[in-house]
Length: 94
Image (cartoon, rainbow, N blue to C red):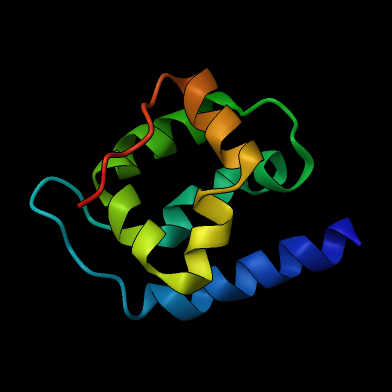
């Protein structure tokens, strides 16, 4: 069951990379968060690489939350736990 979640997440990210939009301070690329996949799907502690990618993509989190395909991953309890562990505050989206 875990493998199917990771596979679905991977496919969503690959499909969305073509439609990634740009922010002034960061390139919003959902696939940049791929080092966090195992932590998001299993709840394991995030790696240093995952934390650095979350920090890089922080300006993009509101954009990801607006996307129905990504919202469930970015807004999941495990993703919130990862963000907290990495010192990234929950985004305040408009």
